[in-house]
Image (cartoon, rainbow, N blue to C red; front, top):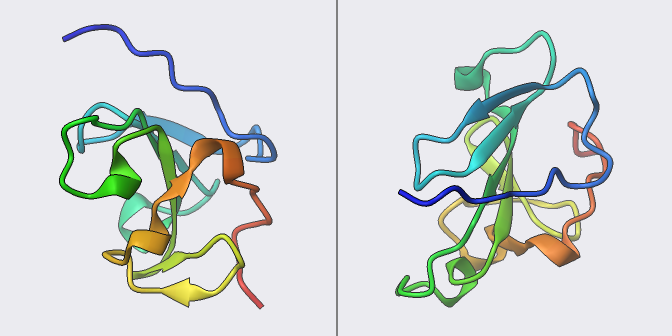
Length: 99
């Protein structure tokens, strides 16, 4: 397995817990004071050029709140939707909670 450098997205609080993702070698940033299963997290993935999902072919970010993902516009959506996979260069961390 080659060593991939995955940049930390801007705005993610420095007190976030950082773990290696169980999915394809990405990084997971978890809100301080919460557990992974509570799903206040941002998962940063390197991308897979062979993925059948075009949104997963380049580096991308998925932000979760509970069982839902947070879209680029800040709406809660199904995490399986393509819009849940935000290209890393378009991701803007707006906080852990959606209003």
